[in-house]
Length: 117
Image 1 (tube, rainbow, N blue to C red):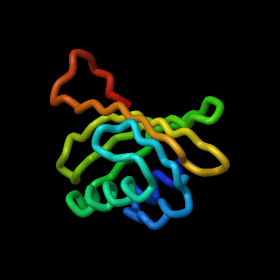
Image 2 (image 1 turned 30 degrees about the vertical axis):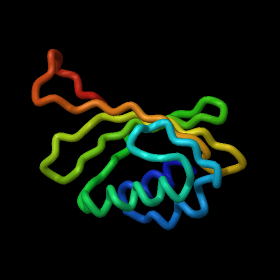
Image 3 (image 1 turned 90 degrees about the vertical axis):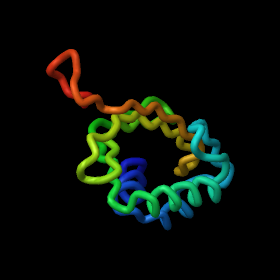
Image 4 (image 1 turned 90 degrees about the horizontal axis):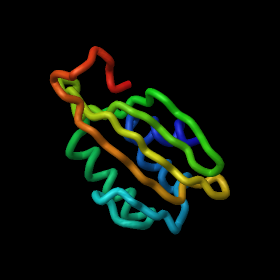
């Protein structure tokens, strides 16, 4: 459910799924977005308008109880090196009701040969 939501919103840019998949009392911990389903939808819509070629490809996904974790590669456009992010969602009654994220820029050079994924 969460991976479907993620791909619809952040890769297909289909914000309509927010209406049915996000709870009315949505709580946000990311400083870029306000609490509430409407505020989240408005913020995502504004982001997607500003970055119409953005993608956020899921690299890993896991769950622990009512929490779902998505490790993803965010790119604002095809030329962007991007960011590595972990988004955490709390699920209640089949809806996303809370969100946290940690985002890290992907550097041009790293001290090791591993990727961030």
